[in-house]
Amino acid sequence: MDKKTQKHINARDVYQIRISNMVDQLMLENWAMRERLDRMNIINSLTNSMQKKYPPEQFLLIETGDLRRRIGQRMATEALYGLLSDLTPEQVSVFEDAVAGR
Image (cartoon, rainbow, N blue to C red; front, side, top):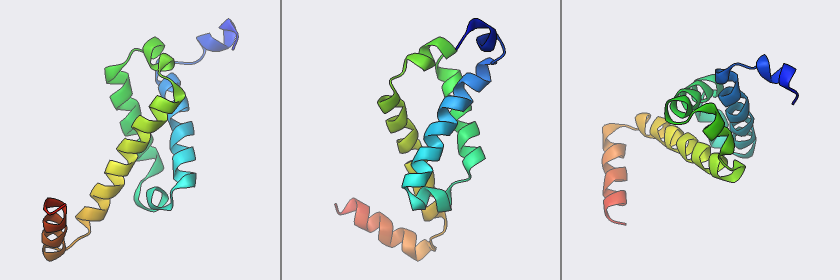
């Protein structure tokens, strides 16, 4: 990217472009994420989190595989939370017992 183009990309866009590409890939690969997560909400949430934690230059230095793993974990957690919130109290109890008995 040349310097002229770089000047027109604001800091938030740096995060959103990279994150949205990975979110799209992960959603294509995982039907549960497609069904359970709102694309724009997860992109905005991840963008806000990354902006708070990393300056743009440091964010761009995160290896693609590492960033994909982090984003995938966050998305999986969000999807699981959505599944659990749909359960009845009895189903939650069964789930908790199963997790405790691992």
